[in-house]
Image 1: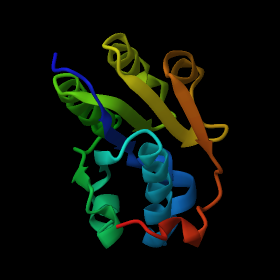
Image 2: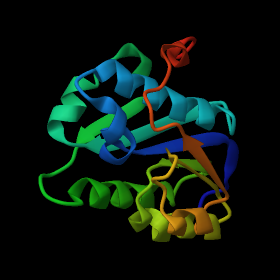
Image 3: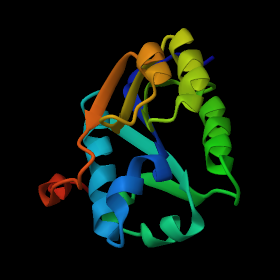
Length: 161
């Protein structure tokens, strides 16, 4: 394992889990929600990058200048295929020097991956919607940040590039 760099933060976005209640027909709401996650990440280090996976239609609609720091890719069709792909990519993060991983989901299926990252000495922050984060994630993460389930305020995008 590479030496951990406390200034490097990797964000993992489970798009459907994080955005489903707020996305609706307005892509700007999704961009604002993702910007909230990025703000959480920036509290842990200045060098933030990330990746996210979701439905092809959702990913296609998330083209925005505020998301240039984020690599978005469509998941294969079928239940939990995007989650499987995200967890595969999280294993790749385990071979890097990233010191903090911000996992934006409420899905307890991510708990084993979060536990592995913590066991390697990384700080793991789970960001999810209040009332929608699995107790398994609460138990294994260093920190859990709960977002309001309602749409993120428009001001969240200020200063995000």
